[in-house]
Picture 1: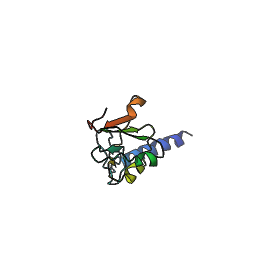
Picture 2 (picture 1 turned 135 degrees about the vertical axis):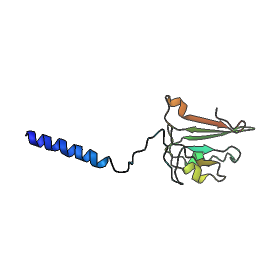
Picture 3 (picture 1 turned 180 degrees about the vertical axis):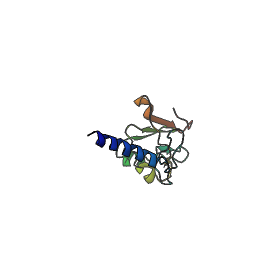
Picture 4 (picture 1 turned 60 degrees about the vertical axis):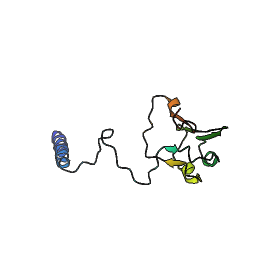
Length: 127
């Protein structure tokens, strides 16, 4: 019984010793960011100067996360990241390429209300 436990401890130490000389595959994530592939789909980003407010992005969004409101002199874009499944349908179907899939994948926030992004074409800033 005692010899079995001692054998397991020695094998465990040998395994750790053996792996200590191999190349590490673990990244030090927030300090070292991962290189993303070219076709990576992150959070959708909207460009007001290209948008014609056709609302195709609203219609093709399976999660109903995109909202476009056309005013008299501006267009308002809303994206609810708590609903968004980052499928890329909005960017793929946009006829003017006003929506692109960014490389941003860090969406952790303290409050769910911070996951609602609204942009206005008049000032082209986050509200």
